[in-house]
Length: 326
Ligand code: IYR
Image 1 (cartoon, rainbow, N blue to C red):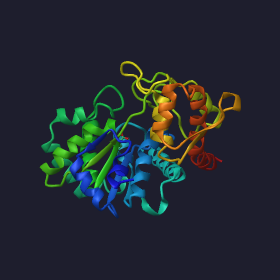
Image 2 (cartoon, rainbow, N blue to C red):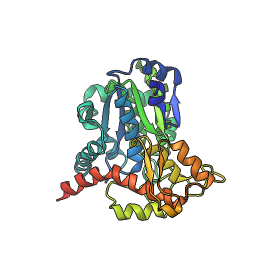
Image 3 (tube, helix red, strand yellow):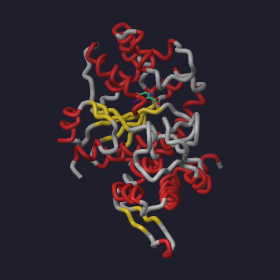
Image 4 (cartoon, rainbow, N blue to C red):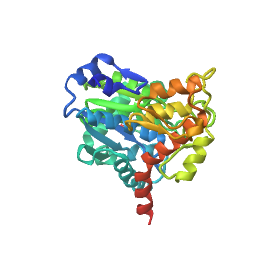
């Protein structure tokens, strides 16, 4: 696969193409990051950005994972101590999921975000950014209905992280795009260079195909799920025989194949009894989606194969979690 294609596959947005094409010319040793507010257990949302990191490692880039403890604190996710404990568990789960330990640097936000230089730069951004802009950047991130002062400091710090971690590229879900747009404008305003960004899609809710899959509502698949729970959840998924259901709906089963399964497996085998045509083997998302649309592949069989592939992906993380709790 061509390097630009590897860097950008399964993304919803590339900001901006020219800059990412330049990176693709010589990705070796370039630094890319994603940040996460430490929270309970990894779920498919986290794993989608992690898949992108694995692609970028395969392209030769160095990966930085920011365990954004100060950000989580500013977003009212608990006490500092609770957040740091969660972050440690999160780190172990990412490694179990398949990030290369040698080429992944884990950084806590509090390692550098409380230093004088950083703090003075935050204040400089406070001066150059309008309140309205900072508030809008947080629309999809802010916890709770009421905007607090902490919520407008948050995106300014996220923008500065890119400078302080000395990065060449940032990754985030589409929910982070307004923060990144603020970064593109505001870093140059205080004398730093804006960096390119890749945004990964937000997967639809499993049972309805609507909106986004999140841990707060609807059904989420997480690293804590047992094989049986996973099968049950996948079986209850919305899966019409088309990749384009009506209106704003998506086909979440196909999305999971596209963003989670095919990037990590060479082939997917759908097991079927001989009287139903025998096993089917797919080497690409396209052929599987085409067969689902034509009726060659029944949604129930697709779900069975999806559940076992996801189970294989989360099993190592599930084991690490149970060891940590033992
Ligand atoms: N806003 C992210 C967490 C986060 C991401 C990055 I990239 C940072 O530099 C800091 C925080 C979230 O919503 O989880």
